[in-house]
Length: 295
Length: 329
Image (cartoon, rainbow over all chains, first blue to last red; front, side):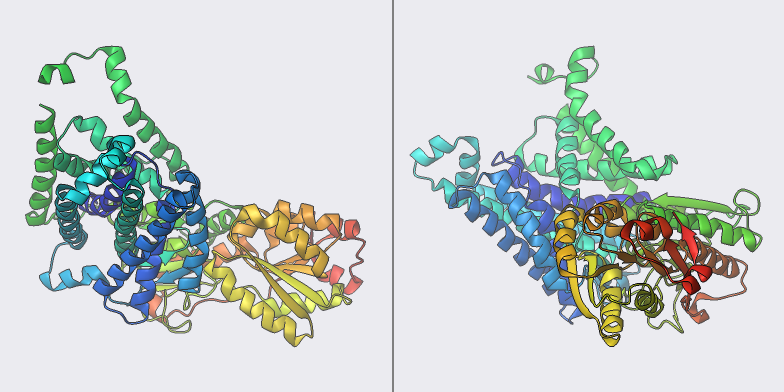
């Protein structure tokens, strides 16, 4: 059970990393997420059912997500549509794209090859295939992100988010940076969509509902628990945050609460995490180290 | 300090994973009652009736919750991200002996979690196109169940009797539901065979239903609704809009007739649940095996008429139908 929750947390962490690229670095929420996530799954599952190798199918899913991000980016920068609206427009439009791609609202992968099947020969205990899959993809994504943010391009991207005027004044094409960010971020989000669809064994047009909350939860839990960190550590904190969120949901289910009202519990968990800094201040809990102590 | 905390948590997770990797937990084989794990996709009147029926069906075969077996119930509330966790909870934690999935996504989540524990499908229109079984007659794997495929033929026969002048049918369904897609195709064939002209109206979500029905009422003689969860939940909207132009609605589920549909030949959702429960009971007691148990399909159903609605629309139901029909209002 717990192993499975950790594995799922890792797959969802990829979503958190994707959202982090826009939500934290460029400082805007990207609603495209709820469309690119199921799109990644839909393209990947459709490709697999038409006989394409799961790894290539997953990459196709990523490509599709990048296209979605690109459209949002163009609407936002060239079309001057506010970013939230642009994201929502693309998200709702993607609903039709997904239906067109799958030709059905729900496509199953039963008896079809999946990416985690490659771990079958290793004879792992139950659910370790997801853990291994998660570790491998997280390692790839985190190293790519670290590499990217250390290049000139990556630094320009960060500068755009930190101070757009300043960035423009030193000759950074901020619009291109925003388009780039949305494209890459939605590619990462679609990757998590493709992996989760394979893990769940099906793609569904409604799978995107509420995923942005899961992604934000991982980011926020990571930040609240671990505070100020270096860039690489922040990425790891998102992964840990995502795992903790899945464990909390598992705990709620295990404690035997009526799952009919599960959403209110996930909302309470999130609200509680968001309020921890305020609570700490209000109660003046000295035994919890504050930022001042570190300095 | 804070940095240490992050490393500590990462180390805990890694140690835990490595630990449980090597310590293959030996399950304590303690005595327990047989468990039936039920995973329902979302709450709405039709699916809730199925769950009630399942409990009744199990009871009919001598299994009573809390006495000689336990029902472990989970409801995903349409949140597909939780269905996987809930399935694992039912399989691993509750050690279910038989699993029941109500509605397609729930059944798929269960099917993806185990290929060993028997799964009984409740309310899956076409298990083959949902990718759950290979063949409806000989499922072959660990899955069998009860189809909620409604008797479309009988439904359109009923239409020709109570609405003899209606020649144009509009089919309303949600583009997001696998179940409906299949049924829409079938309804289209049946209606065309009867010489009706068919127009299909797909809605992406419940928000577009009101406008869609407004358009429909100006273009068709009556509205047909398949077994569709989205439309079922918004039935009141459909009825309100259709009533404005006195357009009759022929749904395919009895609960939708109660909410303002005119009439149907329907599988009673409760009976469907009872059938599902009985099947689960037979598998639980070892009398039946999923691999060799054919998917159960209802051939006929009850005629259900909403007399109040008929009066409102000024439609007189022929006596010979009235005598056979179950009336709801």
